[in-house]
Length: 257
Image (cartoon, rainbow, N blue to C red; front, side, top):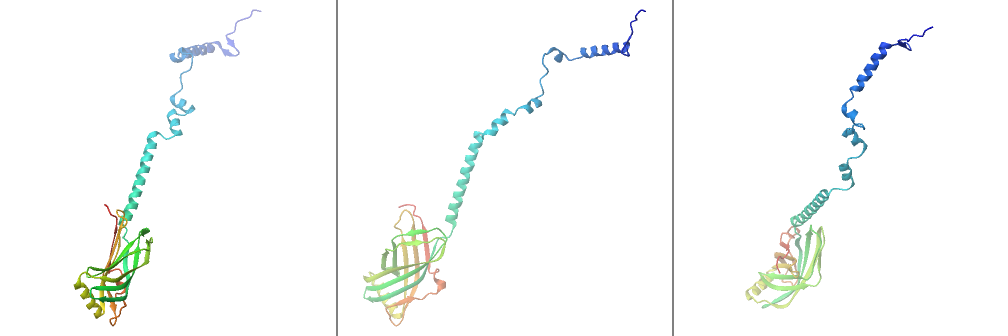
């Protein structure tokens, strides 16, 4: 029996296979030139490449700060230090000066004959200090009567001004032994006021041995001392409310020697 060529292959019509073959060939003909001509596939998009490796700029920046950033940090630090020092200095100069008051003035062994005067003076000062500690050496205590000096002494005991104190005491002592008063009018006034039982002195505490560093000048004026029955001993007559009002305090720094 003669074999016949069948147009069916495994149950698929031959016409359908031809059409499918034509479509495959057409699809192969429509491949883009870039894909067909190049041997390698097209490069991946930039976003895909970035996902695989870190950005060189960002990686370099993560290791250490840039020089500009370091310089800015140093400048900011310097500015902060300058502002802090300015605030400290401003607080020092704006804080109240220490205030000196005369708590008590006592006189003993007082006598005046002609133009010669003899007496002992003991002055107790009360100090309020809102600043830091200060040490004053070789203070000079002077006693005046109507602007006439009648006694002065360099105090050997140094005075340490304690910080932030509201009631430090300092006792100073001076003596006049037969001191001659140059102004006879003043000498006569002292004798007359003493006989009347009241003498008004001016007490001054001075320090300027550290020039050109700092100075201290405390002046307590019109300090009345009472003597009973022409006694040689007298004590101050002011009240506690007048302790600081009688005195003026000057504290500062010499600018020039």
